[in-house]
Length: 118
Image 1 (cartoon, rainbow, N blue to C red):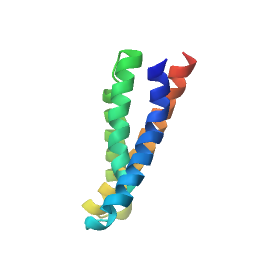
Image 2: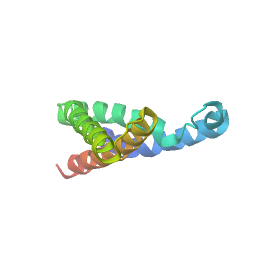
Image 3: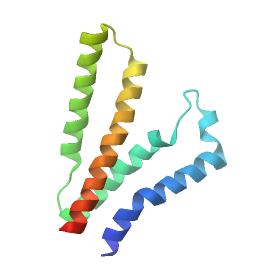
């Protein structure tokens, strides 16, 4: 039961810690690209998703997750090439990483709901 509660509170704890770290160390101003909290938060969500899916369900959700974000990258690449007729790495990677954040958050929330209903 403790792991389930920790799993539900993990995103909130990490988000509060990241806000404190970003404010205290001024990380946003140290980088040239204006690093934002969701950019770093995605990595912690992926690590949490791996840890909790392995402990709670005894299978890893990471291969399915990698398949989803790889498909997203392919769709975005084809959209850039066929619709805009140009490809820029900066715009592609920024859009892909931000969409990866939303997909990761949705999958993590679904994992929490499945864990508590099962």
